Image 1 (cartoon, rainbow, N blue to C red):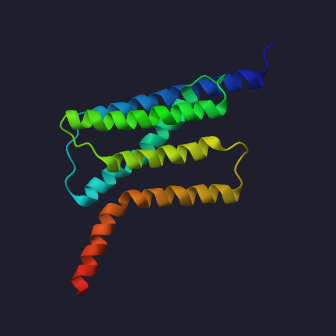
Image 2 (image 1 turned 120 degrees about the vertical axis):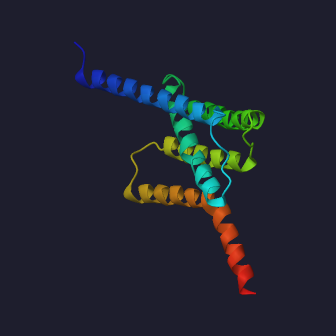
Length: 163
């Protein structure tokens, strides 16, 4: 006789695996696609860069989900981080070869998304309310970091106009 919880957990794991694989494939296709126009404005460019954080969060989470559960959790996370960072580096190289601009700034935003995923994947116990709030604050701070190049220019322009 099959235990209901075991069957349900297998089905949930399978669904999670399919979603993770889909997210990874979708993000990789977007990253290497030459069809996207180059963003020229500072705000449009900053908002476009903002997408790197959730994209690499999804890649890292998805990779850790796709890897076999028989691997030790820490190894699964380390392999996924190495793969996600290698993918980010490779996509910047490919973008440079396909007419899109390669950018170290994009690689930094990729690393931010990877870092947030590592924190999320590294939790062992269910998070307390304080931990959830701390993670939410960290995510918002990371998103502000992505927009800081545009804000920084506005701030500098505003300070120059005061003179």
